[in-house]
Length: 219
Image (cartoon, rainbow, N blue to C red; front, side, top):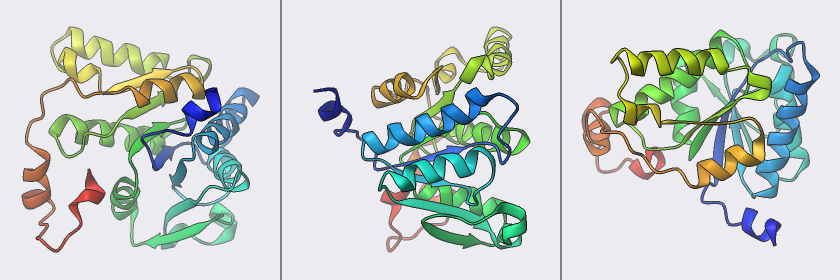
């Protein structure tokens, strides 16, 4: 019965941000593999930053081995195997890091951050900001493995307390300690915050879209 419920996910593809290192704790590696298997169980494809190193390699291999489609979006400069290893599944080469983030977002219905470093934080905070601005209304999940992101969540709560983030915008972030609980929360997510501008306004003006563009890809 539980598997039947899992197969009814509202997400087709989820973008996962994570470290190109595996971290010092085995629980980080376990969490990446667990998340990959959870996506497979729910018939969800993966969008990620490409390559086969660190947590990025572990989750992409888990999803690929489970028979789901994997899209790796990677800047051409980082494509040599000695830098990032070999990407499994479909490879989408892009010009730079900015285009990488835009492509990952375009092809995804939601976002999840596993433990990672500067790059993971930058990607996570940007998609949170995009949600606050009204550019998208996709769920943003934080897989808080062994309390890795406790300090970040404390900082965000402090920003709410000091009036820099609205209480409703705090709910943009969905967090949980394991993959199954996080996915269940994301399936139930509904935006509570006020957008700075409407999504259609951003699509028409900020991105310079025209009627021939498939704006559904940005929804």
